[in-house]
Amino acid sequence: MESEHQNMEQFLRWAAELGVSDSIDPPRSHDSCLGRSLSVADFPLAGGRGLGAVRELRKGELVLKVPRNALLTTESLLAKDENLRDSINLHRSLSSTQVLSVCLLYEMSKGKSSLWYPYLFHLPRDYDLLATFGEFEKQALQVEDAVWAAEKAVSKSQSEWKEAVTLMKELDLKPKFQSLHAWNWASATISSRTLHIPWDSAGCLCPVGDLFNYDAPGDVSDTLESPETANSTTNQECWNNAEEAGHVVETQSERLTDGGFDGDANAYCLYARRNYQQGEQVLLCYGTYTNLELLEHYGFILEENSNDKVFIPLETTHYTLASSWPKDSLYIHQDGKLSFALVSTLRLWLIPQSQRDKSVMRLVYAGSQISVKNEILVMKWVSEKCRSVLKDLPTSLLEDRVILQEIDKLQDSELRLEQREVEAFGSEVRAFLDVNRLISGGVCGKINRRMSKWRLAVQWRLRYKRTLADCISYCNEKINHLSATY
Image 1 (tube, rainbow, N blue to C red):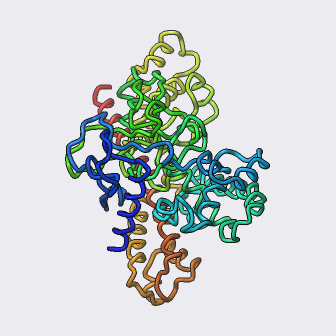
Image 2 (image 1 turned 90 degrees about the vertical axis):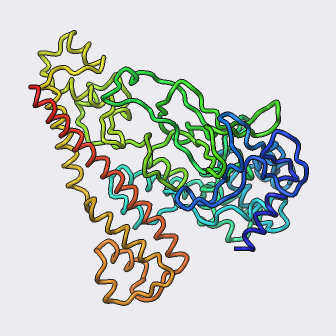
Image 3 (image 1 turned 30 degrees about the horizontal axis):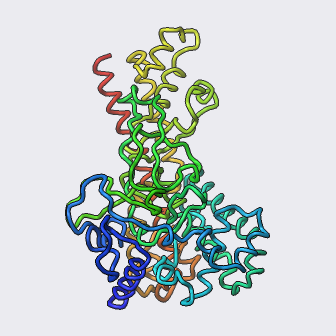
């Protein structure tokens, strides 16, 4: 632990020498780049290692400035290495993120001789992004859309690696840095840690700046209770480019001010997104993401995520009627309430076609209830659909909670499994033990990492099922209330 503390101090000293600072005033010394606004701290229940406030911070206050020369970018690496620059110029077909991944592995291969070694040393050695999931972890997601997203992420990573292998061989990287495992590490580092910069779509790695943990954007009001906000489409942006995530961002009109590259200051400037008390963890927003998207791009999920969405199976006629709204606007919020587009579509669908006159259409597009009878039919249909989805999944909410408890037991470093103890576990846990040949003996680091990914898969599907269960409760409450007035 002491060695880890010393390594962090050395890293912060190195960053200070490059001009990184948590104050607008010039640093008094190069002992550390932190101490006047922020400090490195451990937050076990909120992301682990992060940055805490050492004093009261006001919303909008500059909390960290990282000069351009301290940003690890393709540009900064090519400028210092002619061999790397010449080789990459021969591979114009590679994407900007593929090029940065190769550059990162090339720099890692230099070891302590790299100018970036103090920073590279502190990067995680393993990630839990979907692209790193094995077959067992992918299937553990259970939900078809999630399994497909994981398979697509794995396939994409493998394809991009194959395209870049020739360049890595030309650079004469050691075999371990040319491997798929190394590529997954590099691409995961870039996916989960880069910040947006205007001159390179791959983004930049920002020493110290990437120690901030994630804070989700504010609530997006698009529920049955708030129809007036449903048709407002705005552009909520954070440092990472939301377009890279491949999803539509539903947002508020105000731009997030967490940070960005300031051309006048020639530095990446990061700001407090709210007021913080001394000792609080200072968080920054990466963008608007569902839990599945967070898992895909960053390797974690949020138990409470106001931007999460659950999609239930719909019929072709639903999508035809919902042509005024994007398909991905037909969803259930994490709290179990229906999105404006979904409830409006179902209201219209459950009205006979002969009765869909102008007055009905006006009510639908205004987000208003058509009739009590129609509203009850909508709630019954959704409730039954959610029950059907839950019934078709391999495990229940209760079973998933038990599985998480069993995973926690398995992650005990002192555990030594005997056959009779294995038989006491549920079928999914026994299957994991069997696949990883853990019927006897302890759990090694490699298996622990697989277990971490498996745990995330179970956590994701449990949160998904909780949303469906909450939706059933919500619909039943609405039915009871409406029936009393019918």
